[in-house]
Image 1 (tube, rainbow, N blue to C red):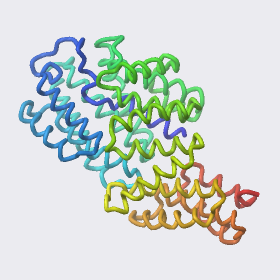
Image 2 (cartoon, helix red, strand yellow):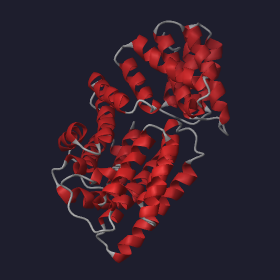
Image 3 (tube, rainbow, N blue to C red):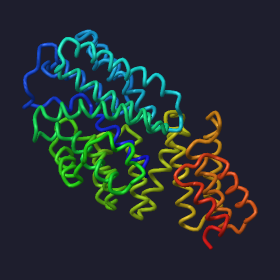
Image 4 (cartoon, helix red, strand yellow):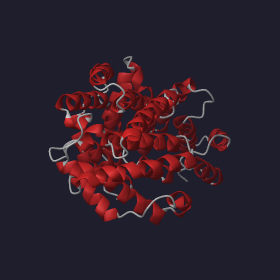
Length: 392
């Protein structure tokens, strides 16, 4: 949980570029894409295509923007959105990490080139902050804490610069709202994070929630991002999964081509006891993978794991093991074989075997888990079930 919280804090705000474009935005120099309706249209279309996983359409609009604004940091940023979604769809796969980081470095270089000419260049500050925020998020995903803190602190300077451009506007306030919420929550709940938080100013939970609700309800360009983060907060930290489900279903309606939001919906249906609906969501994701949509591999792992949980909750451990067999097969594509769902899949297989009374096989799996990476407190759970069988 701490890792998830820090990932958002250090992301600060990976806001799409259109978040700074509002009808009340201050005037920009002629070289700013925020003052150019045609450039904004291409940027908005590229981001919409990325959110719906229409990657070929993203490139079409990026090429048009590059022709209009050669050397602008928006170009590598938008191009990287296809890589970012490939990463999110399968976090266990690090094949896209290096090219994504290269694109973010290109954003920073392009922004710095503009800042050498004008240190208050809005476009440069905006895109540099976003790029550094994304780099921080990637460091956290791979447990590189101090590089994450460095990039996150640098990103915050730019994010605050952007937020001051038009205080009270929900789009501008989204990034600061995210920061305010997570900074206070982490500081209060996770003392172990204090060595990292020393780099950051204090937050304000209530102010952060208010800003996120405003962006989710009234934002023009941050609406989807604010809706997603608000749903995540309500589910993980505020204990209101039914309210979170309402927001996620709004995202599903807005971005029907994005299975990431579909999988989130399934987890919330499961959390709220809507088991049949959850089963339909997860089985549908697996079916799309089985139909040849290889981009669903990571979500198929997750969905099969969740289907195994459902089977165990409903007293069918044999069926759970069948799903976990497929999780094991899917995770074989990773070198080293210790992906998130392989570790948790073996832990859950041990639990299912305990339900079936096959104690010796369950013990062997718990011991295997202890030799693997400790993910989501898997070692603590394995030790607990070694001492006392699951379900006893």
